[in-house]
Every structure is written in structure tokens, then in C-alpha cells.
Length: 408
Image 1 (cartoon, helix red, strand yellow):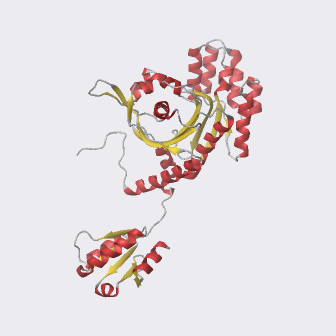
Image 2: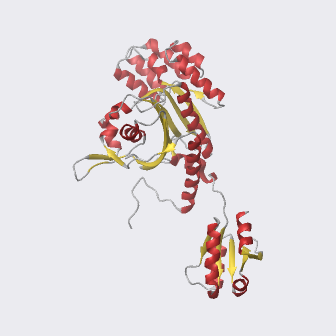
Image 3: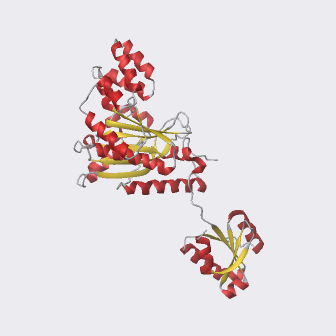
């Protein structure tokens, strides 16, 4: 028996309906902010992903050479493709450009709960807006999308200038190490590294900064910095918008291209892999041949969203009906099925030439209502609508049956 590849999944109809419902709600919510959906190729030039992150990322990707000898990769994320698309197709668009996307990505990593080799991201990119209002809107949108999906989560916000200021005198290699430790939430290891390289005087400030939870506490450690006014304005906008958040100066983010505000959301019920959203301000367009363009965005791990909401995810209930008919009622049954479907009613007909009793038995297993069509119904142009849970039934005209079913 041929099985699905490791790290991938088959999704049965119940799961797909839950996913599509939440997906649709998130798409509609993003549109209310003016974000319009885009799509990019499943595979891209390998350089698109290595130009910033380096060759080391290749081991985490699905990389291949096509028949023309070109090095290509299945997309591991969607921000770089979106910015490549902006440089190639969208530079003449009015700014700010507001794009969102929902697509599958691929990474060669160890599969675990909520983490697969083929996974889906819902994300948004705001390109060309360099302001506190722009930063705030991206955070508000990310918060609103998760809330719309029904996820219970905590939003944490930081700014790279906090750590950048504190660690300004370190060489690049030590900065990377400290950021890597903080990204893994290994603050004690970061402190130990500072002691090991003889920077004991930074240990207490680092501990104080990591534990700061207000802007006043942050600036008490690092002093007033050039970005302070914009940072305060952004948080003021979030406060005015009623967005609950925690300030976390220790957010370092694993991706090097973030330049300013960074934010993350952590969901309940996901164990250690509980980060469900990550984003921030960045500049990538110039790497792909465009102008240096301020941008901000985020990506939501949609598979983790589905794990977080579980069986409680919304599926609007719709009655499902099966038309049960004797042989002479087929033409009337086809007419009724057409009328029901035209009015958005899920309607099934017998496709297996079963007897009347076998059709009723099937209806009892898989339908909410049976629509019975026999000689009397054909003659009168009516249907008999039977509730399969209560057993009650009534003869109705086709319009009456439609109105009853769509009112449920």
C-alpha cells in the first residue's frame, strides 16, 4: 500500500469544511482592512530564500534542479515571494500596498504536533508605509484575525532597537549568539555568554531589560533612543484601539530581516510549539532588485490555528436532505433537487438504484431530512418532508419545503 509522505496529511471532508470556514472568515476580515489576496508560485528560484538567510537554510528546504539546470525550491515561507512579486509586478502600485495570502509552504524538518513538512500560512504584508500607524495596523490586523478564528492567545510585542541599543558594543558574532539565545528563551545562557566574554557589566541590564514590561521600565534601562517617540506613538495607537498585549523586549526573532517592531502570538493548548503568529517591520525589496522599501507583515500558522480551535471551530449548520423516490418519481425528484440546490440546500439523490426501503435506510444514516416522492407527490406536484430525528413528516409544496428548510 502506497502511503502519504512523512510530514503530510490527508484531510477528510469534516476537517476541510472546518478549515474552509475559518479560512473564509479570516479572508473576509482582512478585506475589511483593505488587504487584497495574492498568490505566488509554489516553487521559486533558490536564491530568493538564500540571499538573506544564507546557504544554511538549504538543509531545511525542499531543493531541486530542473531540466534546465536551474536551482529551485519549494517555498518555505511567503514573505520573500510576496516581496519578489512586489519588485517584479507591483512597484507602480499606489502605496501603501496591502496584500494578504493563504497558501501552503514546505520545509524539511521533523514533524510534530502542529508542525508539518507541508503546512499552510495565512499572512499579510503592508509595503511602503513607514509610520507608527502602519506598524500598529499590522499588529491590530493580526490580532483581529486570530480573534476571528476563535483562538485564545497572548500577544507580545517588542522592538529590535531595545536589544540593539543594549548590545551595541558587542561584535557581530556575539550579537548573533545573544539573539539566538533570546530567541530560544534561554536568557540565563545569554547572561552566561556575556560573563564568558568579559562583559559582566551588561548582565544586570540584560536581565532588567528582559523582565521589563512597560515602556518606562524599558527606557530606564536603555535610555532615550531615536526611535522612542515612534514606539510610544505605536503603543498609544494600540491602547486607543483596545488591543490587549504584553511588552516583551526579549523578542529577538529568528529571521534576520526584521528591523523594528516585532510581535508574536502564543496560543493555549499547543504545548511547547505554541507560537501561532510572528511578524514585524522589515526591509527586503532592495535585495530582490527593488528600492529600499519599508514594510511590515506577519504570518499565521494556519495548521496551529486549527489545532488550537479544535472541534470547536465553526461550521454553520445546514440541513442535508436526501430525496427518496420510487421509479416513477424520478423526473419530479430531479426538478425538486434543482429547486433545492438553487436555494442553497444541500441535496442528495439516489445514485445506486436502491429500493425505497434501502433509500430510507440510507437517509436515516446520513441526512437530516428525507424528501419523499411517490405517486401521490408526483400527481400533486408536492413532496413529503420527513424529519429523520423526530420521525415527523408533512406534505408540502416545493416552495413551502424550500422556505422551511432555509429557515432552519
